[in-house]
Image 1 (cartoon, rainbow, N blue to C red):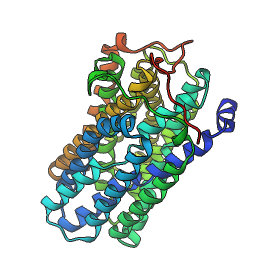
Image 2 (image 1 turned 135 degrees about the vertical axis):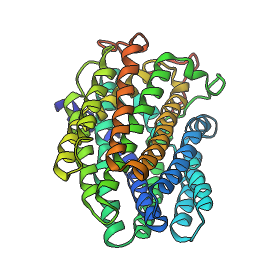
Image 3 (image 1 turned 30 degrees about the vertical axis):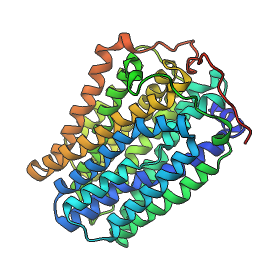
Image 4 (image 1 turned 45 degrees about the horizontal axis):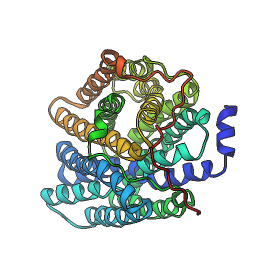
Amino acid sequence: MSSYWSLLRTPGVARIIAAQLVARFPFGMLSLAFLIHIEHAYNSYATAGIVLGAMSIGQAIAGPLTSRLMGRLGMRPVIIATIAVCAASVVVMALLPLPIIGLIVIGFLAGLSTPPIQPAVRTIYPKMVNSRQLTPLFSLDASAQEIIWVVGPVVATLVATQVSSVAGILLAAAFIVGGGIWFVASPELGRVRIPRSRRKLGVVLTRPAVLLSTIVGFMLIAACAAVEAGVVASFGHGSADSGWVLAIFSVGSLVGGLALGHVPIGPWALASRMLIVTVGIAFAALSSSFWWLSVTLFVAGIGIAPALAVLFGIVSASVKFSDTAEAYGWVGTGQLIGAALGSAVAGFMIDNYGPSAAILVAAGFAALGCIIPTLGRRWHPDLRGRDASPIADTEPVQVQPS
């Protein structure tokens, strides 16, 4: 724990972590708030899953594009523009009585305009700390972001069930604007400029570690999305129990991230962490009681933040600095496509076979996320005793005064 306190005392680290957490907080609320809102309006989890899937597909397309634009236009202009469009789209979905096709289209636009906060902050981190601190910083960040998934679902569920689902969505929109402004105002965004990449869009995926991270991230987040839908369906949209179970799921991830943050990243790191997730979710499918789901999903959560930290670390160590934002954009795209597919498949299974079927789907995704890095371990960098910083560009990186 002393190394985490040392990191937080590094100038700017605590501030940028807090700012990006608040800016991304609404995305811990929106999926559940929209799931409750749309299911209540149309009496169909499948419809809700399709709309959430459209939103996730929009986010997936935007990931590498907006990340690459930050190298051309700068981080602040791109993030400000996307904040405005995304917040407006979310408000329209909450307030206007749209047909299903309208919700799908506006949801896609909201996803397409998701502010690229995560690629921006992942790109900034290597310029804020020394190489020895970078891997623990990725672990701390992956753990801290679980606050989004601990508090977000609880807030979304409580507001949506006790006030209204519209109020829950509007609260998330307020966070998009307020948190985004705080992040954009952070001086770190003015001190680092992402060099323009000389490669064509998508070439960074030829890096084996980036492709591996993208595929495994897809499986991990698909599993989480299916778990979320299954838990909500288990308790119904009128109960706050689903929010508490999902919060406990995220607490497990927070605990795992802090406990395993210092474990060296070897070639089996990703597979071993995904094995924890797989076992926990598989046991969760055996019962839909509150306490059983809470305990088993807590265990499953222990592997999530450590797996994400490994994804971030092996990507950072495998690409040039000018390509880091795009690489993280592709990793994010994989995760968001996973969220889309996980939500859609889980919604179909719930409507036809019940909530436990969605948990089984989640276990299947997690198992694939364990098998793939096992088979592809030769692509997995061994970072034990190695620098996890990005590969230096041949041209100087511009550092601007704040």
